[in-house]
Image (cartoon, rainbow, N blue to C red):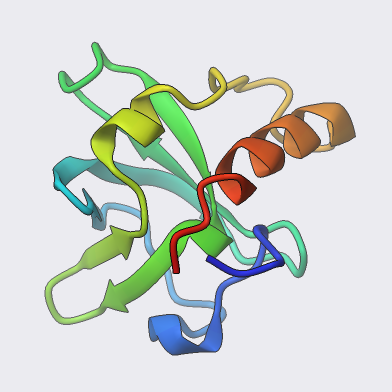
Length: 117
């Protein structure tokens, strides 16, 4: 993952403006759900992933820096995290994920500590 956890890396294959809604999200050890919402705002890019029944309908916030690759043909996003790392992430705060610097810092800090690539 990058030093800028809230930005897509050039090597991911993501192009700003691409609609990722509905793309399947794959952890290093299997599928985790689908993109419910995403943003490609500079220094604040993220995915909101609906995990479906995997963790009981929970949504998770994944900073763009966790994305390893985007497969536009297969509509899949691969992230550099395991299912457990995602499951143990800070709880998604639907009302706080936009504009709450403390929440972004907590989520960013959690994922930044997971850097594997």
